[in-house]
Each structure stands twice: as C-alpha cells, then as structure tokens.
Amino acid sequence: MQEQQPGGDLYFKRIPIIPRSIKGPFRRFKSAILWLSFAVYFLLPWLPWSRPDAPAQAVMFDIPGRRYLIFNLVVYPQDIFWLSMLLFIAAVLLFFITALFGRAFCGYFCFQTIWTDAFIFLEKWFQGERPARQRLLREPWSKGEKLLKVGGTRVAWVLLSFWTALTFVLYFGYAPELLRAIFTGEAPAAAYISTLALSISTYAAAALLREHVCTFICPYGRFQSAMYEPETLTVHYDKKRGEGEAGRILARAGLRDRGERQGKGHGDCVDCGLCVQVCPVGIDIRDGLQYTCISCGLCVDACNSIMDKMGYPRGLIRYDSETNLSKPRPEPVRLHWKNLKVLGYGVSLILMCAYLFYDIGHRNTFEHSIQQIRQPLFVMLSDGSIRNRYQIRLTNISGGEELYSISAHGLPEGALDLGNFQQVHIRNGKSVIIQASVQLDPVRAAKLHEFEFHIHSGKGDTVIDTARFFTSK
Image (cartoon, rainbow, N blue to C red; front, side, top):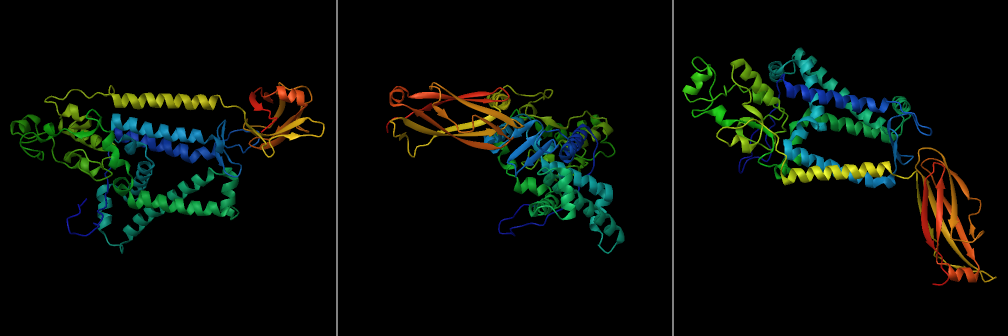
C-alpha cells in the first residue's frame, strides 16, 4: 500500500489484494476454525431444546419476554452483572492471548477474518487461483467470461451476506416460525430492517473493505503494541538467516545449493515473494513486525513449502520472539509465560471465570425485594394499635411455574396480614407485588423493633429478610 506523501492527496487508490491459496498446518487450522464457527453460528438457532414454558430452541433471545434462553440457563435483564463479567473476561482473554501469541485472535478467531476467508474461498471457487483472478481483474467488463465469473462471485457473496444476517435475526425468535413469517411478509418491521442492515454491512466488510477493516477501522492493531513483550511469540522473518551478508537473491544457476549460497554470502530467502502473495492484508513480513500483520501464519506455510522444495531447513518465517531472534544462535522456539504481565492476566481470568460460574450455579430460583411503605411510615388505629405496611416483590426465574409462600418470624400469631396471598403462583419470568401489613397493640409494638420475612419456593429455596417495625418517626 502506498503511503501518504506530505502535501499530497488525502486518500490513495486502493490496490486490490488477491491472496494465493496455500496448504499447511496454519491454513488447516484456519479452515477448521472457519467451518466450526460457521457450524455453530448457522446451526445453533435450529438446535432443539425442550423447555416447559418456552419455544424448544437451544439459544433464543426473547426480547418481548425480557429473557435470554441459553440451553438450560435463563438470563434476565437484572443479570446484567453476568454480561459485565463476560465482557471483562473477553477483554482479559484478548490481552492474555496477545501477550503470549501476538495478534493471533485476529488471525484465527475474529469474525472479520472468518467471513473474509469464506468470501475468498467463494472467489477462488468461481474465478480460479490467483493468476486467473488477476487476469479477470485486468479484463474489460465487455467480456462474457468476466461477467459470468465475477457476477457469479458477487451473487454468492450477496447470498452468504443475506444468510448471515437472516441467521442473526433468527436468534431473536422461534426460528421455524420466524423464518416462515419473514418470507410470507408477516414478520415485524424490525426483522426486515435488521436483515437488510446486516446484509449490507457483512457484504461491505468481507467483500469490499476486507483488510481495510483491520488496518484502519479496528483499533486493536493500533494499541496491540502496548501488550507485546520481547518474549511474545508472533510471526517473524529470521533476517539473519534469510539475508546473510549479501542479501536475499533468486535461486538461479549456481545459487540453488544452500552451501553455494552461503559461500557467496547470500541467505536462505530465494525472494520468491510467495509469503507476500498469500498474505490476506498484503504486507511483506520480511520488512519486519508491522501493526497490520494479523499473525495468521499463512506466510509460515508458504515459506516452509519453498524451503521443503529447496531442501533447506524450515522456519525461515516462523512464530518466534524478538528476544530469541536477537541471539547470535537462536534457540528452539518455546512459550514464555513466566512474566508478571502474563501471570497477572492468567490469574485474573481464573478468578473471574470461577466467580462467574459460582454465581450462575448458586443463583436462587427467584428474586425478591421488600420495601416498607413510608407514606405514611406507620398508622395508629382507633384502638391504639400500630400498623406498618410493606411491599413484597417476587420474580420467578426458576424456569417454570412456581408456588411461593410467605411467613413472618418474631411476630405474634395473626399480626401479619397478606390478604389472599399467603401462597402465590407465579409463572416463569413474571413478577408479582404483594401488599403486607403488620398490626401490633401498643405494648408489643413498643417492645418489637425488627422481625423476619421468610419466603419459601416450591423447589426448596428459602430467603430470610429482616424488616423494621416503626412506632414513631
């Protein structure tokens, strides 16, 4: 890519990056992550999951019902703490991975990378390998071959973008019914607006912008250097070995054998350019570590394939650390995790995950709040007795309909009046407000300052909440 020259135009013309396909362990790992991600994303809305009072869908975000169904877990808006903890865990996990392996998240797990990979696969399937795609790029649109192949590619991209957007929308309703409603024109307007917006954004990000998302839009590439350590493993070019004293040079006659090259001062890099051709962001890793590098390892596969053909040792481009590469004789690559930053990230991850799972596992089957009605704080009746009133709110989050009973300890018999709500049935995800009153004669009221509400659920959960009894302001 061209750099902005002082006094020049603000923008430069984009040079299309047409990556070449390559085989190797990193490419296989990327493909495995792609297919696994697609399988989870596109099939999860269709996975059945039996529930007593909700659609049989494994994952569904029930916005009208204000609940999020995730297998056996039902999450409510009041569980916002869980979301906050998940975001903290995701951030620390990103820092932890970056400190160990550089920008590996971007290279393998980022949505932008995964969908761009899929779009490139479709491009290759319709148009052929890199030379064929370059030839089509140069040809005029008047040629039928270009119209057919490039047009077919873009239709496939549009379909994948639409399928991606539609699948996202299906998470917000019962997938079979919502899909039928969308195609029969009976779905809410929000479903059509969301599908259109997400289709356009997916197409723009994976078909048009591609590496520009990583280079100019995503902030991660800009601040990742703050998380790097000299011992961080990331993709590096072994410049000493590749350049030698006389620099890299093509493997022509008299410079094919490694001994001949070293005798003339040349390194192992045969300047084939394959590492640049396979790079999805179009950089030359031989220019050193760059913020645009997403550490996908495809250049490692490319270089190793050339080393194998030449009969040279592998690893001219490899995952390694700056510390190891700066040594006169680099040692075998190993993971450096014994430093304060990495250990701090690791301990934080363990503690936050443990607390989150503990909190989820020990959540009560219902939530409650008891508030004293303070307008007025107490009422003195005509017979001299004193009455306090309380508002009890119960929310059922058990996953099914439940029966709740309320009692009071520390009060004389008959002092608590719950009306007709000594026992109350509450449907899952619903709330009920119960008005309670406590009435005591003046003598007992003067001696009593606190008592306890006991709330019992049909599943055996019990909560005890202390309440005050007021006789004066």
